Image (cartoon, rainbow over all chains, first blue to last red):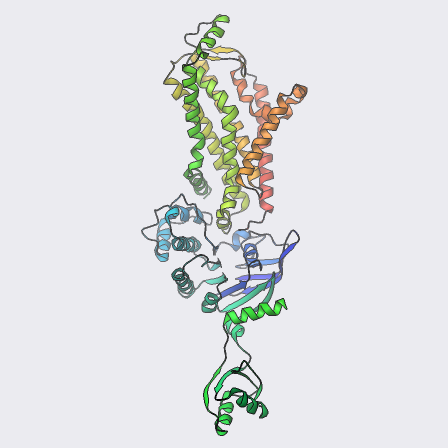
Length: 298
Length: 278
């Protein structure tokens, strides 16, 4: 659905995106992570033909965006952080105006989408009377009107309250499940990305520093959490037997290659050491992201 | 599809309160002029001027005379301001507010979008000129009788016409004022396509017009009058000359069309190469 090849964008002397390769396949919920100014919005701008790439190729829905923008964006919907509308017009008028830039849209279709996002009853009110959550729903409605196959969401939960964030998360999952949409989600909310994305890419200063599945990102290299009466002594015995390679933080041990945690338990029990807890140590996306950023800074 | 999109642009333009500032100010200005005229010594001075020229004042201090007088004053001062304001707003305001980003994630070409916007601006300019003319006649009719048209210095050359001919000149004057309004609007529109604030686009357009007007008035440059845009945008005044110089009007109209096309092309090029970011 989205294919970026050696993408580069320079603003004056600042390089916003450098050598970016990215592949988003149909049906994925792809997360784009990165700090402020990492190049996420610029990359999205290039995907939508709003920002001209300095170098490289941007293909959306099989078409090169810079030369065949019309074909590339025909089945694309997008939402940006803090969605902006014509405040002095009604929600309905806004939807009608925005949808006509893609193709003529029937009243029935507009009504259907309004119902889908839960704005029924308020569609004739001026947008200036809408709450932030309602604006987010209107933004979703305008993105869904052209019956897209690909949704590009740039910080869709920005400014929403916890309930709104939760609702947006459920909606994104619902969109993927019920309508089978491919979704590219750019977000600062690592928790949100962790809960809904199947694959992620991390940008740092315009460069991609990680791309992989969420499982790959959060996977900890064979670290096991161990709780015994005397962690240091237990770890020493395990290391002497060659079952672990190292220990740290007074609770974690790294399994030696090919060693399962059941062997640790057996050895400790045989030696009369109590084992209160033994479990694989996972890490959150936040841990992964922070470690990655720390590593890149170093 | 194009008509739907144009309707939407007009919807956006005429849905904004600030679009109506021009109409409201015309209303206020014309009524203020009429009241001042009615209760000042100007009618007496006008009567004297007519009598010196062997004409009777009755029948010439009329709706058409007052309407034309107001139009001349307003077309010089307020009309450029309001059309430049709208022209400067058309693209820059959407870019500033962020709605341009919402539009440009749709499969519409930038050139098509600009043409739609320019067309909406042109329709506004036409409406504003027509409303100016109609308001002039309407409000003058509250205070003065129907009659012939008298125009005179300092802006126009001394002429008198009967009511029918006066109305024809009045209508023609407004018709040829449309290119003036459209050109100033397009100038504002061109600046609006660059990466700048709407106010800056409006101010730049008005500044260019003023500079041109100042240069045109400098006696040393009288030989170069045709080079100044202000000369051509005010050619509509020639419609009140005793003998209408159609060749001069035709020349100015073609030059104004050239200006409009140039402004539009420059604007489109600037907008096309721009990166639209939040």
